[in-house]
Amino acid sequence: MNIASQKNFIGFFYLGMYANKEVYDWFVIEYGKRASSILDMGESCVRFKKPEHLLYDLISEHCKKFTVKQWIETYETAFR
Image (cartoon, rainbow, N blue to C red; front, side, top):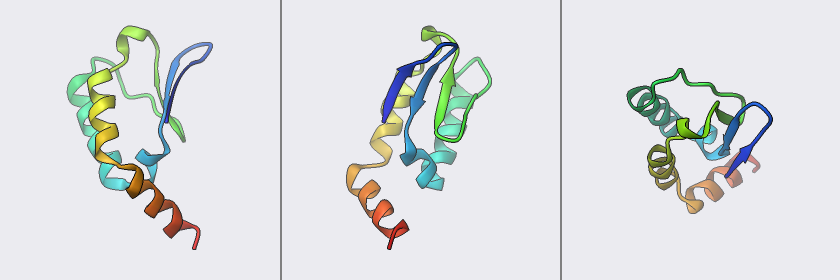
């Protein structure tokens, strides 16, 4: 997981979101409820145009939904 300042946006990179469909769907729905802007997602990141657009509370809740143990299990299952 990473939050990085790029040239034209701030990126929230979190592969766990893409590995678990339920967590991904939850994030998309909650973003729509809380944000005033359209969701801008790439293959591995969510892009925010300005620092004030970052939804820290949503990111915090999201990180609690997919534990390290779940990520390890998902990763090991995918490569066995």
